[in-house]
Image 1: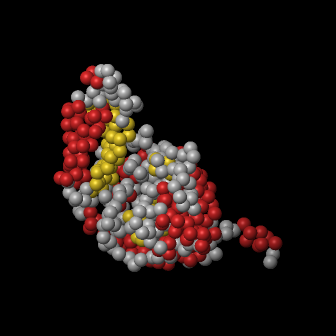
Image 2: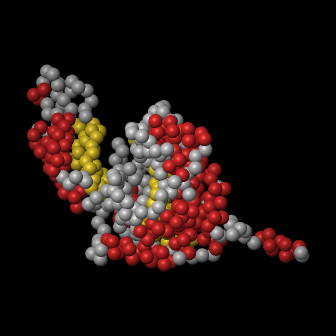
Image 3: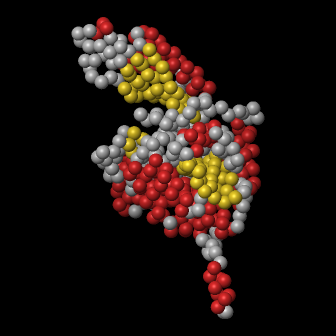
Amino acid sequence: MKPHLLTLLLLLPVAPFAQTTKPEVFARIDAGRAVYDDIALKIWDYAEVGYREQRSSALLQERLRKEGFNVEAGVAGIPTAFIASAGSGSPVIGVLAEFDALPGAAQEAVPEKKPRPGAIAGHACGHHLFGAGSVQAAVAIKEWLRANGRSGTVRLYGTPAEEGGSGKVYLVRGGLFRDVDVALHWHPADRNTIIMTPSLANRSGKFRFKGVASHASSAPDRGRSALDGVEAMNHMVNLLREHVPETTRIHYVITRGGEAPNVVPAFAEVYYYVRNPSREVVRDVWERVEKAATGAALGTGTTVEWEITGGVYDLLPNEALGRVMHGNLEAVGGVVYDTAEREFAAKIGRTLLGKAPAPEVAALVPPFNPNPPRDGAGSTDVGDVSWNVPTVGVRTATWAPGTPGHSWQAVACGGTSMGLKGMNVAAKVLAGTMIDLFSDPAGIKAARAELEKRRGADFRYEAVIGNRAPPLNYRD
């Protein structure tokens, strides 16, 4: 070979994939696991709560920039929200990434309850895995698009404060999903399945009572207890439970109750959630909760005001996309534990209420069920995305089978190789689903037709939170 020809060949760009088959993309994801495992464990260690995820968000953005994505930070008026894009043209596939932790859930990565010293929060819903795994999938598809010379855009949405802060709602309300053809997401869980169960619509807020401080023993008549207002409200709401649709969920915690027993509290606060499959029922029940607050203040000689801190739509599943994603879940398979992981899972199982499933459940992939029974559900701001863009998600086994979300056991499992293996499954399923959708526009067209049929021709999106600004201090 002539020297000048050899020089020219060496200067040609080298495709990152020797071939472009799905198995080889999965192999590349496996080969790059160490980078994303490290990112996930760092975010697990940071354990930053909603709208305060500065280090977690920055870490994901840094990785995406290194991989050649264009990153726009601070979108929708949220300092920790970002959008990262690669590729060009249509279709546009959005990938959701979360990274907030839960307060009061600090736990070490061990199979017995052991809070982490000095920590105030923990990843009890596995969002450290969610964010890192979604970034890993997006990077793999960016390379796949380039290697194949395909038109299309992969767009990673860094979405903070899913836990009660409704972070995605502000991005949807701001029109940042307007040109997206399909949105994909995933979530840590104790088993593997496509997310086809509708979630619950939700409204949340803080009720703040103000009274008059006084000596609780020598001058109680000169005080008006803000805590009395909170307790009177809670009592009336608890009576209300008998007279709401049975699918309603109402939760509260008293976030401020006073400073000392011998001082009549001048300020008290209670934090409420109302959930139901129907947004209309949530609205009606919430109005009755507000009336209970007003009555409680009147009866206790206090005043009350409230702030709506969160509100989300119910999740609208998409069967067309679900079937595409399920094919990829079957191809990837579940999570296979080694001996140490099986022992860890068994120990976790013994700490749970009731009999835990066998550790081998983590390896199973059940048949696709487009209409699973609703046997309990949470709420998610993915719901707002799903009413605007055809959306599909997968759950993978990142926790020992039987482990509930928002538990110390979930935090513990998420900080181990068990959680990282589940994240790896999710990254492959997301990547495989994107390959199918980029390769066959008919799948996207079918998903859009299903969305339009299910939501109805008269649908107009209005955020449950109205026009309020993001509640950046809702964790105060």
